[in-house]
Each structure stands twice: as structure tokens, then as C-alpha cells.
Image (tube, rainbow over all chains, first blue to last red; front, side, top):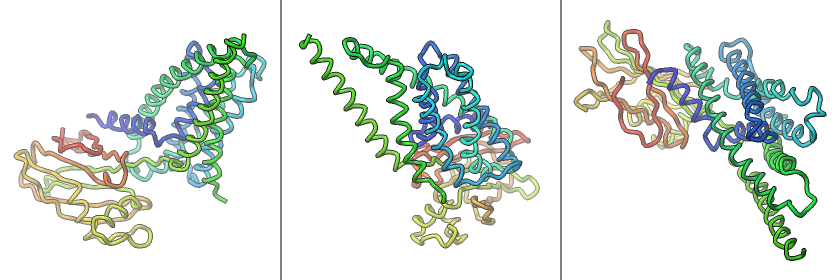
Length: 201
Length: 176
């Protein structure tokens, strides 16, 4: 196995591990507002997230910035909660500022925080040869995220179908809106609990 | 109408219960997860033709290593996860193995333990009169500590790095 492939594999395993719930929940929160036909938008948002965390990772691992881990670990669930709140508050994306096209920017900014979460581990372990581990790990993270996104899209489509059937005779919100509110509420509750547990003051 | 409405109401009640259950499960599991560190070690294997020896440089996170060595030696780690060098070598020799092409285990001797921040570096060496061929390696470090432990092994030959990944349950593998 090449060195790059080994680190890419490490990245994929890291993101797909069930214990990596903080990253997976953030992806779910990002993806919750999209339907399968919006796959370009969701891929763009997730790629923006990857660019964000790759930037921090590179800056931290090369020693350009030093990041306080307790603050970063607290901020990771805060970014998840913020994304969920945005999901719930913005009911009509067509009327949102810039028609909701700020989401990739938001994902990129929050990605800066999540990248810092990986950085200290990689920095400690691969201090003498960072380029290949960094590149490989990021490729793996991106591939893992796309896999999570695909699974989420299928699950969301299933949820939408159930809601569509059940709501027919009742005056309940549209399936997408209901799904967004339900998923964002659960994710926000879990992330709020993490934020409280990880508070550093 | 009531005949249509009743199953729909039941469906909604079931959906709301499922939502409530997801919330409870989510909150319950949240306690067990929290942060997700990268559980990995790095082993770099090289051959030094000048001293005619195989060198292994291991890097492990000090906190996890302290737990593993403490369990292995039945002596708890000291302050800041510090472990005696002898206990560190004994654990490493039990969890990291090199064998020659014939399957004979190569005895690796400790040549230094150094702490650098969150990481412990361990040096191992074994005499090798000739550049070894067909080495087989197993890095089972810290598998007893973390289910998701992934150990990287890199070997450098002629300036080219090749890598192997080991996870729990893996068997020794030939070095590329």
C-alpha cells in the first residue's frame, strides 16, 4: 500500500467510525435541508467543509497556528447547534439572504473549527513528515463524508416518503420542512449536551 | 372519514414516538461519545547498512500507551502517563513483532524511550548482517485499549516509503 493510500484509509476509517458522531452529526445537519435532486448543493457544502478543515489542519500541523484544544472541542458541537438553528429558522431558502447561498461559506468557516479537532493528533504523530499524511488523511475524510452523505440522502428520502404517506389527510407541514425540523432538533439536542459536557470554563 | 383518520393518527403517533425514541437514544449515546480522537500508532522500519541493523521507531500516544503498559505490567503508570522503560519494552515486544522470511521471530532490543509532548517514541533494534528480505510484521499495539485502533507501519527501502495498516484481528503481513 502506498503511503498516501494508507493515510487516506485512516481518514475514511476515522470519519465512518460510529464514534465519530460529532463529524457525522455535523454532516447530517448540513445535509438535512437537501433532497436527492439537490445533490450538487449538498456536495458543494460538504466540499467547502473539507476545504475549511483542510486549511486549519495544514496551518496547525505545520505549526503556523497553535490551537487550544479545550476551546476547539467546545466549539465543535457549537457549530453543529448553530447549523441546526439555521436549518430550523430559515423556512424558505428562496427568501433567505443571498437565497441561502451562504451555506458553503458557513460550512467552510465551521470546517475551520472541525479541522482543528484533527490537527493536534496528526501534529503530534507526524511532525517530521506532514505533507503526505495531511493530504492522504484529507482525501480519506472527503471520501468518508461523501459516503455518509449518500447514506443520509437515502435515509432522508425514506423519511420523506413516510411523512408524505402519513400526512395526506392532515394539515401538517411539507415533508421536507418537517424532516428538517425533526432531524435538526434531535441533532441540536445531542450537540447541546456535548457542548455543555465540553465547556472549558 | 374516521376510518381513514384513525390509521393516519396512529401512524403519526408512531412517528412521534419514533422521533422521541431517536431523541432519547441520541441523548443517551451522546454521553458515551463526545470527542473522537484518532487512535493510531506509527512504526517506521528501516535497515541501517552501516551498523548492519534493523531499526524500528515507534510513536504512540502517551496516555493510551500508559494504559496498555500498565495493564501488561500490572503496574499503573505514573504521573503524566510515565512508564518505566523496561515495562515499555516488555509491552512493545509482546504487541509488535517482526519475523524473517522463514517465519522466525526477530528479537528486537530496546534502544531508547523518549517522551515528546503527547507522544512517546520507542527505539528498537535487531542486528542483521545482511539486508533482510521477506520480513513479516504485525503491529498489534493498543488493540486492547481501543476497538478502533489503527496502526500504521512504514518501511523505507531505497528511499521509498511503503505502508501497511493494522486493525484488530489482523495477522502478520509481509512488508512490501
